[in-house]
Image 1: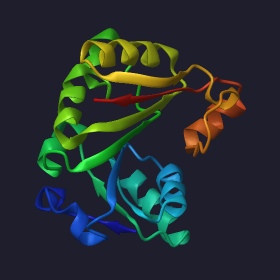
Image 2: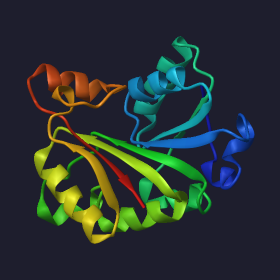
Image 3: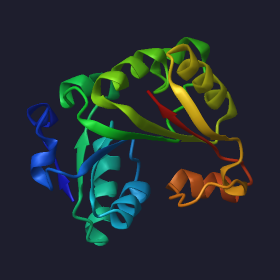
Image 4: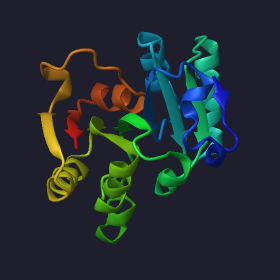
Length: 194
């Protein structure tokens, strides 16, 4: 696990640090890193990038990856609003949005990672036909996101309002997911493609 100190310099060059032919997947808001470390261990053939807004949280994620000897993840501190400055057109194969901040007040809607402003950014960095995987325990955010994706002409599939009692296989849980599901909160998930 390595922290990239200058993500701007990596734009268009992320594959150079691992296997150039491997798919490149991005988790926006990696938290303490449980999800990204487990995904990387399950899929050594994929390059993963994990970003978070807060360095102290990112350090915990990197420590987790190091303790599990994960070698195919690179971490950086960054803001999702600047994704186009970190990644070139079509550089990312898959984006993971796991338990993003719901920004509950209506006037905060533009800060939600599924707001149309972010969806337009994702269109530029993700390859056409590839996917965004979205999970949350917040029904209001899920509803907002369904409408956002529909308005921006994204195709939605595998929509569930109760992930842990659905047919989804190979679900890798985040720390939040473990916490919320143990409290009995159903987890919502959908796959979105362009």
